Length: 383
Image (cartoon, rainbow, N blue to C red; front, top):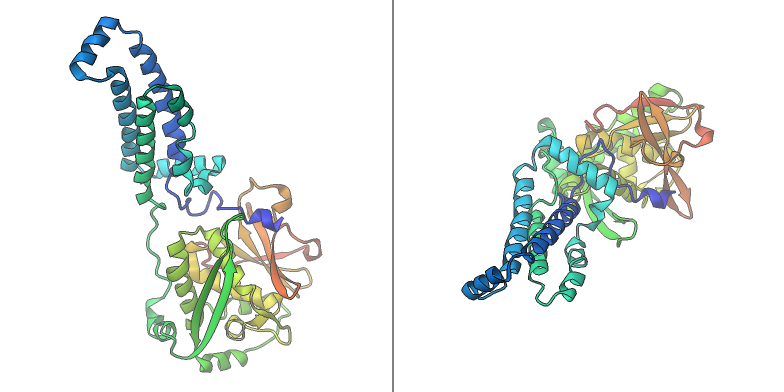
């Protein structure tokens, strides 16, 4: 189940597909010019032989193929120009996003240029000159290359560092303090290669010491909410979120769900240690913790990321001894993957499990031994 879930690109309520419309353009360009080409070719071949002979004499070429080539090429370029002219229209963006969602074309963005010639080649082989087909192919390829300039939908720039904390965050980003190194691997697509990442973060030891002196009780809902929000304004967590956002997430053009999975992959490298309840700052500094500690880290980080991460809620087990997350998802996925509904929205249930000397994240259905659950919103996440 978890492997299949890795294929989830995004849901209908998340930021649009990072590829502009490569797959959609190929579908439109193939189904529109090909019938037009065949229709014009049929019509031109029905012209009187004398007319054909005169035009060939004047132009020195097969004018029928020339006309069809010009028209099909113009149709391709015109359609691309129309899409690029109105690509920022919200209704068109929603339409294109919905088409790519349902057709599953977002994974073809790097291969589409190589796939485009396949339907054309048989026509080229069956013709003596193949001028029409070559013109169509050139038009399709030009259209696809034109869309490379739009590798993702426009998104307003997000600054994750509050102005009043800039003076404290900047020294940490410059590694002024106790430096901790994080190294992890992440597979963005189910069948693609894994990517390796490494980042360093400086910690102020005085703040780490202050965190160790906070209350440790985790018995009531109020206790869990205190842990889940205690470090949202801590400079170290803001510096980590800012570094991940600017140096990795934005450069990779990942969707919010991809970004969330990458964050989980980072935490998967931490050691298992349930010797004490930890706050998020302590877990990140020690690179160790329990199931609950890792969830507390995510609960503190997600509101810092705001709209760049999915909307989330905090999930408390019946006996109030365990805490998990709910990530807003799409109801179109199979029921076995769906976690729970809360206030009319579907959430995937997320919780870490220590297996084989490594953390594995359960994403999907709500585990039976957790029910009934108590759900608390994470203020600021996904908004």
